Length: 299
Ligand SMILES: [Mg+2]
Image (tube, rainbow, N blue to C red; front, side, top):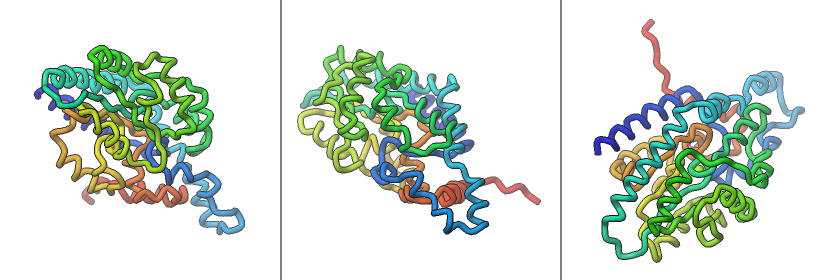
């Protein structure tokens, strides 16, 4: 337990630091709404802009706001350490749960993006070139060349060797199934077959797909970078509700739920917008700043 407490403490510090210095970007994983948002749709026609709006638009560059989060993700040793830490705890908890009796077959459920597969090259492309998701995202997926995150392969091979069923529940689209499995096979990820890769069909919520696994399995571990990867209580919750639910489920984190850091995008950003992904860049920028709680120096 001491190890878990240390992990949670450290994770809290690192993610708090990340979130305090960066603003988020597009969610590539969890929302239908944002998938439908295009850069063109977020900008008013030029002839409708007054001088003040044009001046504001020139100063709000949403992709650039993701430079720090993506830089951290691509360059920091701390990111790698957190993934190793998360997968180490996953193995430790897997070993413990293998000693406990279960009525059904054991399953481990993992998200894919920013849990197993590393899409920060796409995020870097977007930040450096000033483009917003989903521009370029399909090409990135089709390239089927996303690297693995540290510790993932070793953990998955170990779980496979222990006879545990592995399910990958991802909000990538069905049209991306072939490229996704090709990418998984490139790295030799175990059990990366059609019946184990459950992609988004009609809804972003992963509840129905978890329930499908639960019909003949006991899910002993869930791994993800987004709270909605763990339980449907988190679906579409606002900022305080998300924190309240995390408090209520605190005993699950580090035992059944293993969280990885993603300061680049996620429902945490959607919650800041009340999940209205169609906001203009200026509105998003305003929501981001309104949601912050700055220190006020004494005068
Ligand atoms: Mg993810």
